[in-house]
Length: 509
Image (cartoon, rainbow, N blue to C red; front, side, top):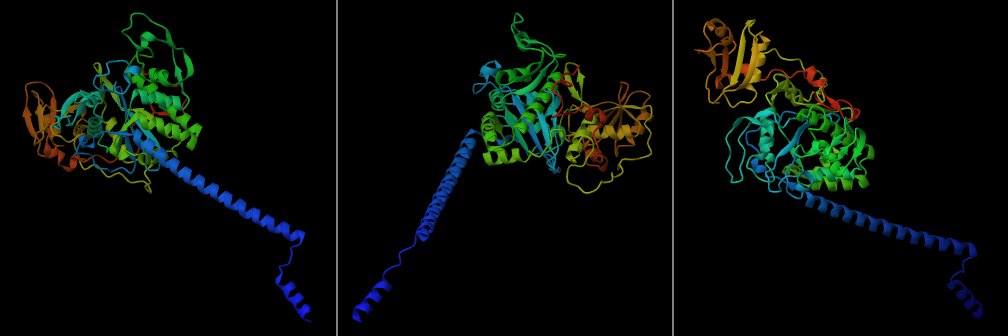
C-alpha cells in the first residue's frame, strides 16, 4: 500500500516527457523568438547608425555653409506683400579660395558679380520665374555698408554689378547687391545666395555634366580676347555634355558666340540653368543623389543668415521640388541699349515687378492661392485731361523708388508722350515743378492739372520737364496702379522654359 502510494506520488511529481512533435514545436518557438530578437537588435542598431549618420551629414553640411553679414542689409526695405518668395542668386567671379585657378585674374583682386538673377517662387509652389539683370544695367545704388562700418550715399546711373564691389573687398558685398535689387524692383528679397567659380564647377561634376548647345566652334582666343593667336578649339559646334571647367567656360564665354554681347551670354546662361534643373529632376532627389549635391552646393555658396544651416537650406530646396519644368521660366528685365550700357524700359519693368508682387505668372495666372479674380480699382488720378500732342520728360526729385515710372504711366494714360524718365540731380524736392520752354506755358498748365499743387517754372530751353516732389509722393495719385493681370506680351513672349530645347533661342542679335 505504502509502495503503491509512493509510486503514485513519484509519478505525479515527475514531469511528463514531451513527444517528438511537441519537442519540434518548442524548438521552433525558441528559434522564432531568437530570430525576432536578432532582427529587432539589427533594426535598432541600424536606426542608431542612420541617426548618427544623419547627424554627421548635417554637421558636415553646416560646416560647409558660409554666410555674409546681415548688418549690411538696408533697414529701409520694401513691404513683404507677396505670398511667394524672392531669392537673389549672384554668380561671383571673386578669385579667393582657389577660384583664381579656374577663372584667371589676380587672387587679391576685388570681388565682382558676373551674373545675377532674381528667382520668384510662387506661393502655389508649382511655378517659378527667374529674372536676369544684365551686369551693365544702369541703376541707382542705395546706401550700402562699408567694411569700416560707415554707409555710402546713394549713387545714380551706376552699373548694376558695381554694387557687389562696394567696399573693394576680395569677397564682394552681396548685401549691397540685395539692397540695390530691392530698391530697383520694390520687391522684398527673402534670401540671397552667392555661387563662386569653384563651387559651380563642382556642382556640374556631381550631376554628371549638363547638356548644352554651341552654335559655332569656339577657340581659346574667344575665351581670352587678349590672346595673341586663336589657340586650340575649346568647343565644337553642336550639342554636348559639359562639366567642371568646361561648364564654367561655357557660361562665361561671350566674345566667341553670337553677337558677343552680355545679353546673348545671359540667354545661354538661362538655357544652361534650365538644363541643370532638368538633369537634377531626371536623376531624382533620392538620398544617394541628394547628399553629394547638397555637399557640393553648400561648399559652393555664401548665403544670408536666413539660409545659414543645412536644415534651412535643404528645406528650402525641397519646397521647390513640385515646380514643373515647363512652369520654370527665365526672362531678362525689359531693357534697351543706352550707348554701351543697358537701360531698363518702363513701364514694362514696373508691370513685371507688380505681377510678381501679386503672384501673377507671366501669362496672368493667379499663383498666389487667391480665390476668384479681383476687379481692378479705377485709377485715382483719372481726370478729364488730354495730353494729345504734348511731350514730357519726367524726373524723380524724391527718394521714393519707381515714382517717375508711375507718373509716366499716368501721363501716357491721358495721351501725353513721355520722352524719358530718370532721377533729378537732387532728391530733396518738396513740391512738384513743371518747367516749360518759350511758348509752352499753356501745355505746361495742362500737364500740371495731373499733379496737385504743382508749380509752373519757365526755362530758356524748349520742352516740358516734370520734377516730382514729396507732395506728389505722399498723394493718392502716386499710389501704384492696380496690378496687371499679366506682364506685357513682349516680355512674356521672350520667356524660356526649363524644358525648352537646348539649342533654341541661344543668342540675342
